Length: 161
Length: 275
Image (cartoon, rainbow over all chains, first blue to last red; front, top):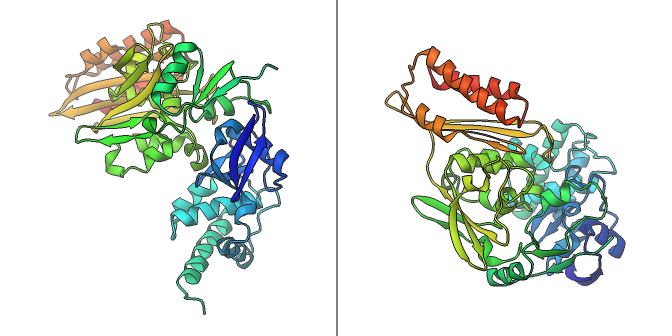
């Protein structure tokens, strides 16, 4: 079956079998290296994508369900200034997620800050629950998200020094 | 492996046409339970599947003063995005505990209620709250109580060749809400179950008492609920112990779960409700 879908703004016709998971099709057909199909149960968060604007686990979605959808992966947001804010906040707080969950954590923070510009600790903990990789110090991560929100708002409203 | 045939109906009439041709077709909205519970790389699906998540009719929400009515393909996030006052307690907390945001963005209320091999988290609450569901089939439309999704044997009873199209939840808060989830796996397993009790306290009397336990099977004693409703909160302990013993005996007879955690929760509920 051919699935017509927009991936990172480009219209694609992806080949898939009806039992294929979306994460596998995106990796196989488009070689998207940010995605990992690890747990296949929506636990690890390493397959997070935006589908029609909502963050979802692509391992839990049969590929056929993506028909007519708009998908954005980490590759589609990597160069956005919002992601630069998050990377800068990681550096400044010396919080560096491991290579397995780095992109997934950025996806969750990107999603959180686009919904809640000034998140509180509960919002942050709830969002980071999507990627429960224990590589980084949770307190450092919360500080990094708060700083990313601050950097984002400064940039957005021209309050940069 | 035999590949399944996938259909993409655009409205409920097209779904009904598919159901008429094949009553066994799998209607898939979120599909999280079906997909997430399979450890294999390739998802095993029945011969025919209809992808219904994008059917607009199944995503509409209506709110009146008495109830909130929503399409079965409303996702948990969609439900949570309603104004907090629109959602009776404790539904919001229950949905948040089902899974993380990325899961709640896919999982639907219809999928949660239509699991054929066990009861998932929403059913016991909606059953206690006397929520209603609309079923549409090629032969017509009917509304039924959510409690009717449980057969006489206590197992899920999802009508064949029909679609659960809408859910109506009364906007009514209970004075006493008690619930515990047993088991801690993300996807339901043999040790997962829900214990829910709701009641109102009116002038020192326990009213509208409801108690549901559900896992692979469901347990509810409506006649016992009737006899407890109306009892004073100061009812003698001996009489309360009698209720507990009757519940325990009926539960053990059904052999649906280890009776020890059930008894402990039952004792806790009665200790909190009755002085």
